[in-house]
Length: 69
Image 1 (cartoon, helix red, strand yellow):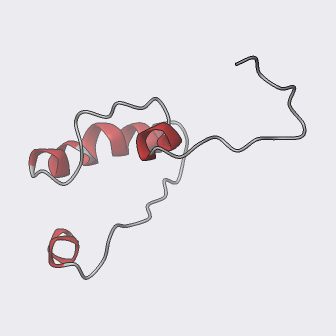
Image 2 (cartoon, helix red, strand yellow; image 1 turned 120 degrees about the vertical axis):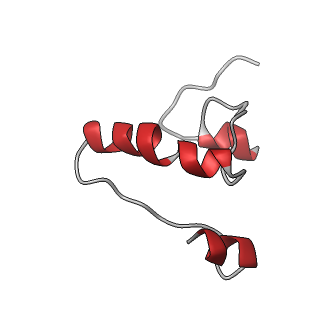
């Protein structure tokens, strides 16, 4: 999978976990550190959400009251 990613054959992978929260905890604790050591995953995320990390604005909603500026 790493070779495919580095060679440009793909730009990422979708993963699922069979159970929550244990499955997700195992991915974060046991799987993610390996690719982080090899420079494939960040260590220094600055955003608290994926939208913030990608710089994508939160869309407005007609179901929410307007927020003060």
